[in-house]
Image 1 (cartoon, rainbow, N blue to C red):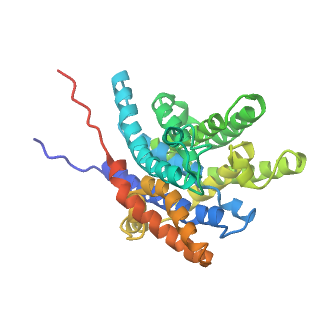
Image 2 (cartoon, rainbow, N blue to C red; image 1 turned 30 degrees about the vertical axis):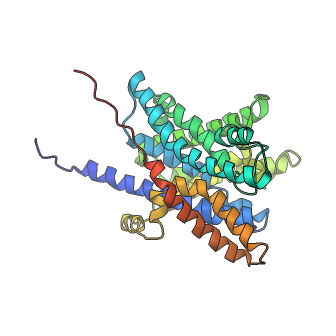
Image 3 (cartoon, rainbow, N blue to C red; image 1 turned 120 degrees about the vertical axis):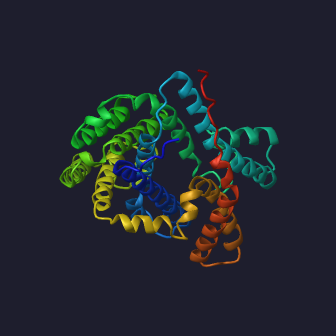
Length: 353
């Protein structure tokens, strides 16, 4: 066997992978610690906390960029294996979490066993009618993530994602989401989430395939244009628009897309200023490693972590920051215990010669 020589291109790919791991870990930590600490426990009062809601577009951008670095399904057999392997990695941790939640809800609310299990284990039902405290508040994310994951290999084949100028991305995306808001009157919340976050995942794919094609000036133009469009919408249509992004996020509308464009531009400009050594150092940081290695599991189990901390802390009049710290500690511990499920891998059998 010939020895493989590590080329400069291979080294750059490895660094980009580390960067994606760090970005994914930071985003999971941000959601669990900051976003849900703020919105679930009220650490930052509404509507001021709405300014923090930039995480979901970035999560899908990272997912799309990671897909660009992975082997692409080329045949129907490859696509079927991709769906099966990705489905297991998403649904096995989900079912483990929701099964535990269903058992808790059956006991706490004295609900019928069969109906409760079905409501919790079906990701499209999101435990509606069988919820309890914060156990299911975050599970909405799983369904659009499943849809985007399934469609990525099909839509990523279009060459436009590697070619379109940045301003075309932003303007086209805003118009598409606006058209869905205006004309797709029968669109469900899942439909709207899937369209919006699919756009961000495909942008991430294009960015991962050719990260250097956009300049800082391009991001600056999008930032200014997005802010100007938001200001114009709020001024011209004050009764139909709001600056409260929590109201715009569920489901994501055109205003939320513009808001996301502004934040994404800010973060992509900031990313150009970050030293690669600092990123490599973050990858080894003790506090971030759990979120890098077990981020999806930690995300799922935060519902139980926050619920337990609130059930114990509130009757005992704990300070809200103490409840927050206990919730984070429980979430990380539970997520790490459950994390082997998210690392399940299927290996494709080699084709016969």
